[in-house]
Length: 497
Image (cartoon, rainbow, N blue to C red):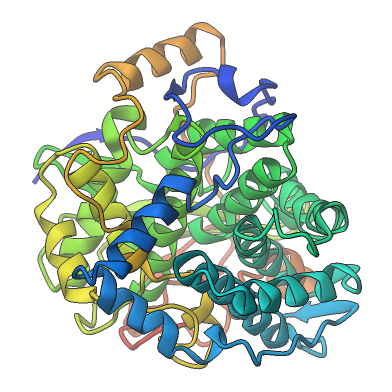
């Protein structure tokens, strides 16, 4: 199998500037927003993962006893987080990462309780669930002031920022919800940190952190921008997706497109758990953008579709092509090295995350295109649950889930306006003409000098990547004698690194 396009995915370039209004994001196909904008608002509300039309569809289908919505709703009502007796436990500071008194499990459990109660309210109309969600959200916005810890604090900003915004979006019109205070917390505690990570990458070289780190923070920046009606912030997130410097930009996350319609997912060379996390996060990003009339699902000739199909086939045990790639690692002005990945990691076909219904339904139902691997894996994963249904560790809470309930749709339903087939090509041409070619340039050769331990936090990827890698996993030698070995994790991985 030969690649049609293969671009070295790692280089430092200037962060693209925001364009301003979401309706004029350069090079992005725009659709009429699927939900009406609130008075005085820049964006449609609700308008992150769920629109008013989506919520109405869920209510009607569940009331009618229609499959598979009822099975999806049963997963929601059975979850312990979706109960009205949940009491929040807000903290002033959330710590995530080694060397800190970690308490982030409190935060993600409360967020999922808020989201699940809010979603349950939207489907059932039971005010007690809305009241529970609002009480949780108000408790946190009244107390949380910072995220701290090791480099993992940026995982917290990204993952929990976008999730918080989605939970709050479902009850933003509730009379007791303190919207202004929540917007301030979301912007200052989460959005600012996420924005900073995408610009500075914690003082590391841009390719030091794997794809999912960028994607989590991109999702936070986008969700925060929409929730707070901040057009510049939304513009930054969309531009980063198309041409950002880190591994979350679409052409870096999916560096090779093959002639069979599949496209290599970068983290397939790392391990299955992180590849699934990344696909789920990119799908979340595209869905939130779509619900504001911005088509990133179709960007660059539907590059994400090809990458998601690749991961779906691979994670079900199918053979996929793989083109070796090398990424730079290290701290800016400090130690440096490189890592080469030459084959896809092993998989456990039983590993599932609640990510597939959203992606499969967009491409096969909204767009009406064939996506056989997505169709198969979505059926295998159904009915999708949410936080608390996929194990007790943080990885089981990285997606909000319940896709069978939330994203199952009729073929052709939910399309506000079909993007032109040539939109992606036009977008690329526009970007190039403007001098902001989104294609990554070749990475400079890496050299190894100082020991990475001196800049451990800057160079860390959240899981001690420099420790415990074995020669049996595949060795990459770099100049100066520093060996960076590729860890092959064939077991069930739940951590969000």
